[in-house]
Length: 113
Image (cartoon, rainbow, N blue to C red; front, side, top):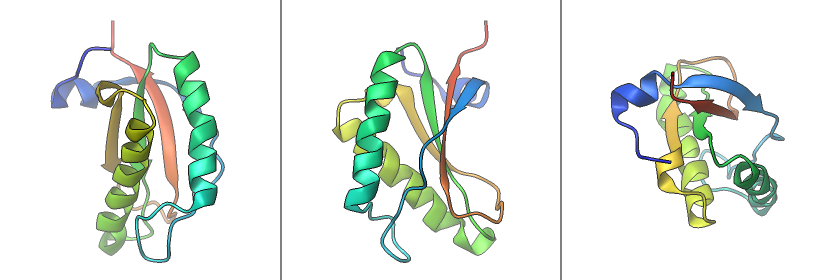
């Protein structure tokens, strides 16, 4: 897939959320545990079967003060996927508005027609 500009990423049309088991990080860090790497390895197979979609990794935070950690966790997740062969053009990591959750979610999308 071709790289997207910032404005194109903002206009990505979600086509679905992938059900990914909760990722586990080192306490207060963005370090993925071995368990999380195994989950992401399974996700890679799914993403390889759907090469036509972009992937938005969203880090969620309990409150605004946790947003930098949420962003770091999303970036760590994206970096792992890239290291394992998912092309960097397909992935964007972001922290989202505090949602009361500390999860990382995965959204697949495409550019609008």
